[in-house]
Length: 621
Image (cartoon, rainbow, N blue to C red):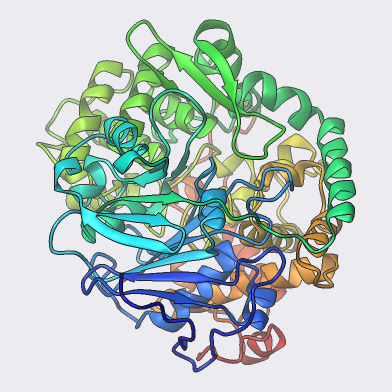
């Protein structure tokens, strides 16, 4: 390995220097796959305090180090695996980590969040983040054993599906590793491919960085897998206070019926019947919002018919994961978003077919949301006679058959591999792609939730429910119930939710904490971990800083108000049945208010004053 370099400089001249401290390992690992150079960089304390880690730290690196207009699948793009200051500590749900890059699907900045145990292992190896640059000439493996970092030949694993590769690589060279890998979909540069963490199809729960084509970026670099192993401990500033706040946080989770009963018993798919009963379950490519068959693929049906046991990520007391088995196969899931996308979205209500399609996506390395919604788009084009191939709603066998075709870019799968926007536009029917900025929409029809419509439109990574989850306010009553069909005031609530989630993705903790754990508790946990004085206002300010920086990245790439759009279906075509019938999204009315709340101009560009107020003076607008 090349000699370690401890004092590098970022592009803006701010030194990466300082001593290791509480919570943070104060160390980045930078690997250039083209040259083979490996460098260890110590992060400036002020950067960590302002951006925390995870999504925030990665956004700062991407803004500084990527030139505008970089091709996401070129060697110039970067792939960043980043943990947060509480990752690997006793903080509940602290097993998460973030994968960030420029998306090949949307061309926006992208972070894809993943659970499991890989993030804590990266911290145990001594690193807050791994920055991968360049591209190898042939398939390779990156093997990290604390200070020993090596690039190995990965040719023999290239072409293997996820479960087989992960099984083999977990014991690579006689060691014991956590494994992040791509499947055939990532290798073939499928724009809806994912990165899979410790996914063996059995055993403990792994994680998935699914959205936006992160798998294609990893595949473009000829990197089959990243293996990590470590034994270092994350030191905390005030262990006794942290122990107390952890116990209090667990009490909060126990007090919430969602995190103490619903999610442990039925998993995330407990939402299927709830969303359907309110009439905003996307059915047949969002043509409908209700089905009397929804219970057939619900969390209750999963628990009754195919559940084998629960599973949980590192440090998680909730345990929402599902280990399941049909008569033909076994594996993880399906989660709610997966069950919707491979089920009602495609008109499929056969639980075994949905579950087996999910297993296939996991093994080939595909984002289940984008895969299902893209196939749903094809089904509608077929329904309308636009697509020559016969791809019918409700055909579970065809659904399963298309998944390996997409992953291997075979037949029609080659077109579907580009995502629904490009697929629909190729057939001159772009209006039937249910996406925002090219990212396929998740499992909530916005005609039944005005706030989610605004959330989809303004998400920095494209159509997403995890930038600001307005379903909590509008359907679940968390923290309180508000009118889901009303639009005044939604901009302020959403911007606060987006800021909170950006901060949580930088700490990093699971979004489920927010059901009953507010920013005051997060600040206490962060302070006890790092020793830095944080309060709830600091948490929200950090989130706003991260969200605004991401917006500035997208503005530099040419995005503006015209991209904060929803498909016309949601603006012009009311649902005709179910609890949300008659409603459309009042997007334009909400956008002006949203930009004003954010301190952005009428085109959605952050003003100079807003940037300076958030300590983002380096951003050029």
